[in-house]
Length: 318
Image (cartoon, rainbow, N blue to C red; front, side, top):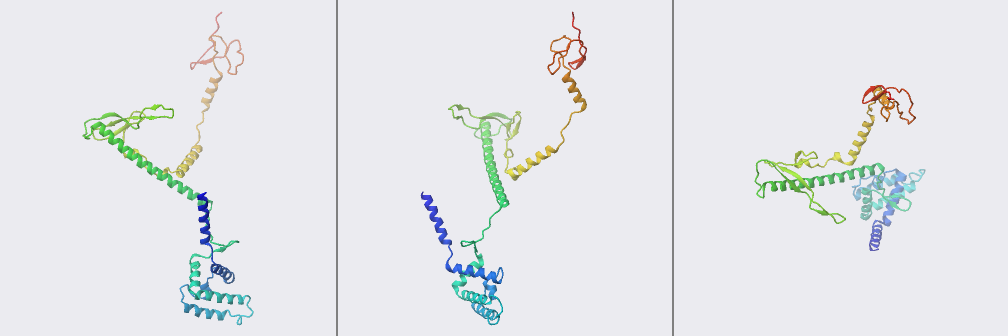
């Protein structure tokens, strides 16, 4: 509950701080009316005809000139001339005061909020589906790369520790190299206890230490290979999941596009012949047993293939 009230208080504080004042609303309304009358992008300075760095004297001089152009007496037939002339006077009065000009310059540099039906709000950029997808892919790839780099550092430290312990066990505490190779067993992990309370033995590995300081470990076939920093897999952008996914998709497409080898007609005929030409289970019975389980036919059966050599039926002795 305390966190809820704190969040509500902060939200209320932000609302109060970001609320516009009366003078701000006057500027917003005036800017909207000015751009609707004179064109989009028209500012107070461009309407009077001075730069944003103009002095008070320059503003007064430009105002007198502009007021002569927009005076209703000189433009009696121009529609909306009175509103434009009145708007010119309000803008000139605002730019002549330090507070009014400072307030307008803030919105002149940072942009004027737009009317959203219930109030004036800034138009914030809202990312689309593509932008969100690119951000998520880049962010997750960066995290995966960082994890790979941390894992690589841990593996390097572990390899260096194993090499040091192996040399110490083979050469002694003084680390004096000896001639020839020495094989020994090293414990990689201490004995542990599983969830059932049974004690599991410590994991050991065979290690060979050569006289030149090379430390080797065996593979699955028992062949020894040197153990060094190259045994660890460094971090790589190519092993992040987006690139790995593209590679797997490409490999699956190319493998599917490859033609599959087909059987030759000779092999098909031979397989068919061997399927249907089977010898009876009873030796010397003089009958052939079909594969479909039908009753054997009496009499002379065709020659069958046994042991890869065709031989004639053997007559049953009386």
